Length: 112
Length: 113
Image (spheres, rainbow over the protein chains, first blue to last red):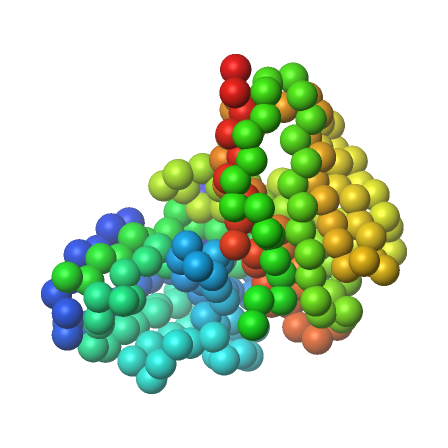
């Protein structure tokens, strides 16, 4: 397997625009996680899915953030409208039950 | 509120010496602990884990120690090598209540040749 695949690797957008980050988890993994990396909070869990169902979205900072997992091989994290404070590296990770999580290479988002 | 804490943002160690990275947690329900290593512009990669039924787990140069009463774990790297220079994240999970992993803020390790 190629591992967790995220796209794009880098995204620069203007404030107010919609941003969509994409993730393809490892085949067979039933958990998918979205994290945001910041200096202050480290790796902050935003939301996670189990078998495509959102289980806990309490880490989503605001209603501007939304995530979907329409099938076992694809997930999106959307920010609408984006703000400069959303600038960070966003990671997607997947795992099987009771095992470690495998991370993608991340999407570096810059909102100007 | 940060449930997993790494209080040392950075650590410098001479090549060949021991590196000790520390991590504290607050949630007594956590029963699975992991360390990840992260290089710049890459995603975190799994390094080593330990279950709460153990107090030590060893994998080559890497050993993780768990002190449940103190809610503390540490990662020992012996001997340290320049290629170990990276950011190390501690993570914890309460597997009975879901599979989510809570991460600390990371410790940047520099191994000086």
